[in-house]
Image (cartoon, each protein chain N blue to C red):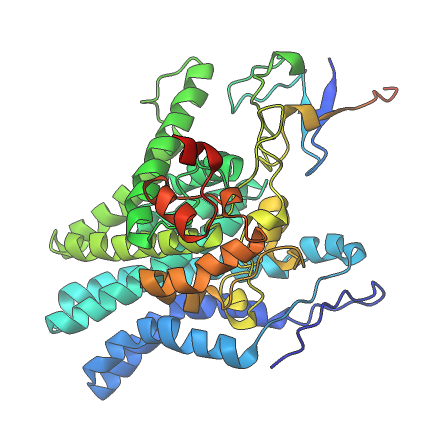
Length: 395
Length: 58
């Protein structure tokens, strides 16, 4: 295990110990290529399942073995760190490997003569890459530079989630950790209740945001300048091109892997703000988003695979920071494992509740009324944690 | 025409330029932006958080 003490290093000659390791992000989209090479060269069908086994099994184990990294760059080193273009390259390189994976996967599924079970393993694997693509797009889409913003949308296309580009920055970040946000999960809400609420809520919110923006410009929502329509068009071009080349038979493969991809995003959304809420101030505004409003994880291995996405508390408090500069905060609530392990837990609701509800409660010093509670189970939760509200009792 | 800076991410709203992408034409006064307007870059800071910049001599 690595040291778990908070280290803030001195500015002089500070070096990022993880600099070279950030290329590990490119390993994720390479996994299905490695698995295909192993399966085709050995003839062993099990290798088609290597990608989910690595993500759901090996990564959580490595997180446990390698442990946490709480090092923060000194503030004086941040400008140089953010301007170092190497870190940008580490995100850009994800994209060609991702596209080789989607296009190669589609070709193999249609023309590889594989049995159905192997194609299923391949589709799940490609889907997990499309899901990780949303993470890469997330890092790129927060930036001011046009190149990065365009690459974000290209990276979203295989997961059929182009509207994420609109909804994440202008919807989710504005309403994060409030009952109004479809992508902030609530105490007592299972992943399976959250999934449809977040998928539908994010889609309708993205549409509404663009409608309002274009109306202010005096344009209709049905305009090619609609960022949702532009981003979805990229998916249409990609899927349409592959269907022209390989035949329409490729479409079920593409749609299924896209479903796996955006579902991976949604399970990650589920664990990022579970039960956390910003309190309303006297002015009627929600308190400003602080590190306390997102679950954080310092687990080294998954952080390296996901461009520090798990330093989520700092990301939401300071969304313009580049991934390499995101910090650990002591006051942020901490997940017991990295995302790879936690997404497996999230898919098993009783296990999730037993692991996480007590952490939400501890974060609010036992006062469950300060949490974001799922309305359908509100009474049950209040009764269970001994905080039935007076007005509820009087009613 | 005044300029207002986000006290979180340093985005500057310049009244003479407006924010055309978001539908606020050049010349839109800061005071004319909606009350629930927030920083278009970071989305963390809101209208009351913005700081008016002192104009420097041209």
